[in-house]
Image 1 (cartoon, one colour):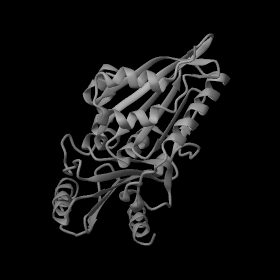
Image 2 (cartoon, helix red, strand yellow):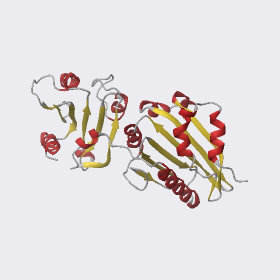
Image 3 (cartoon, one colour):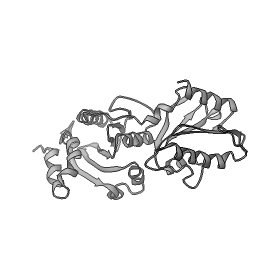
Image 4 (cartoon, one colour):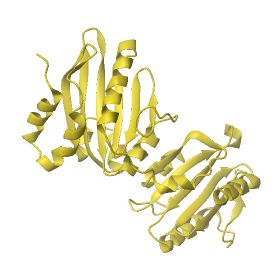
Length: 297
């Protein structure tokens, strides 16, 4: 007999969580079919907060650093078919869902949600406060088609859209690599992609919004633009002085442009509550082009 996943999840979790805590995942998961394309639901999942370590030990830190509220999901199985796993991560804000997405995708598509990426054995997208990941144990035509159907159902069930963080609009489009930026507000992710210090040099917290972007047409021309918004100009100035002291202590210029020991160029400056820094530029001209692009967009 066909089972309705809505009823199954509701019965399972109402015994252990309050109706208020349950309501949002209930609204998303209720649209998933119990059976689809010779697949049927065999397992369901729910993890809140640090309990996510029980599911993805070693990977939960990423989601927790972006304000994970809960992960709800299920597994689809079918005779002779690779297992499909559906994971729906509800984050504390749409900006955080967007941040997880920028950590995960390596190209920009817009087939699902507000940004997506699809391959033969996985599909991911973000929409409003949700990040959705659907994977297949093996790439097969039926599993690929089924993942697409499931993604379309989830996309349609999330009726609202979220705003892209304002700091993203600070990025000049010229020479920006496709899908070449990462949004975050935990300093560990900056150091994971561009190591600048073994401590929180820029005082990055949940109250700051940062983006790290790659510019250039080839590896030999590639450089990084870091941009961040602080709660007030005083915090921005404090961070500016700290990064200038570390990378350009020899100058008191309000916008230092200095050549480093490895022959790359560095610069940093502020604009109100916003901090900018360019790392690994291959020439002073590359920095000037980025600087001018920011203020002439």
